[in-house]
Length: 102
Ligand code: FES
Image 1 (cartoon, rainbow, N blue to C red):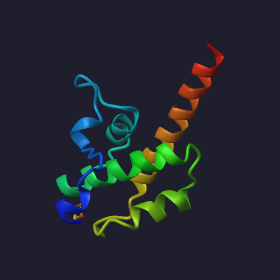
Image 2: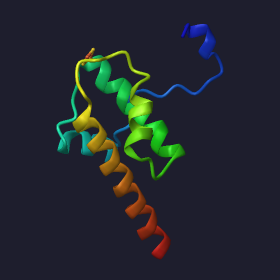
Image 3: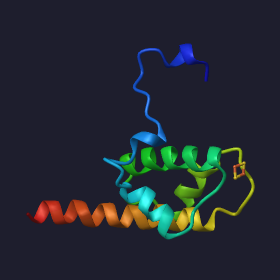
């Protein structure tokens, strides 16, 4: 995308996911599952997965893999990344459930 195409849009980057140096749930799950790629891919995948989880609280593996297919990297089978995203989705649902019970 050309920068001019983003004019007037909200721009979020991977640096904005953590709060005061504390990883968000998705980042923590990537760390837990060793779901790391190179410095380009990890940031992009985190942002795509963040958007996915905001739109769909119960993605299944096929949906996660479909989102990941938008990334050019073909360095891996994404197994740990898929596990991390599904784990994050589960934790986010638990958090929402706990918040609803309080
Ligand atoms: Fe980044 Fe494959 S891990 S291009």
